[in-house]
Image 1 (cartoon, rainbow, N blue to C red):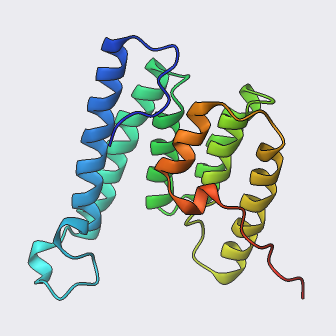
Image 2 (image 1 turned 180 degrees about the vertical axis):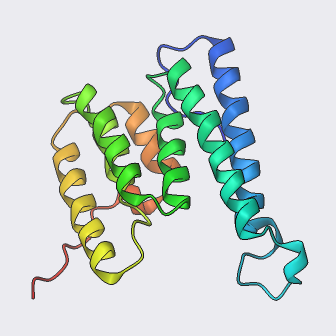
Image 3 (image 1 turned 30 degrees about the horizontal axis):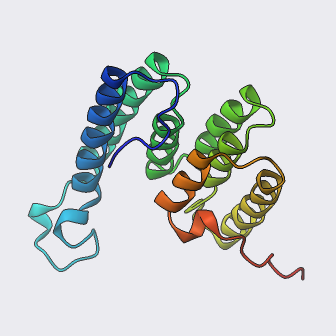
Length: 174
């Protein structure tokens, strides 16, 4: 895990942001049980974090990330990590609202608009929420595709995988 958006930051600032990102990633992997086969694995329940441990862990990560985005408000990566953490807590609306606020602070910036769109990846728990999120992701990606695409945006699209880089077919209207 390393910071992708590096423009405007010193080497020391990037080092600090990378340390925070790595710490968040490592703790998140442990909380989600991804280092032990996932929460649905057949491993003994005693090895998995409890609901209370996960809740406390995600709240601690959120606190660290909020301090990070306060210190580095122009770090798209830290804002994306905060958004992901909010989604990990089931706070999908808060995740999208956070990234919308950042996008609104940077009108006409394709990178921030793309970051806002990613708030809708893995969004929701019901089919209705997932369909809404898919459509919103598509709208934002189309809007971002009409803006100039800096090299850093291409790097982030590659980093976050084909889901963020590909314009999916719009959902069929019923």
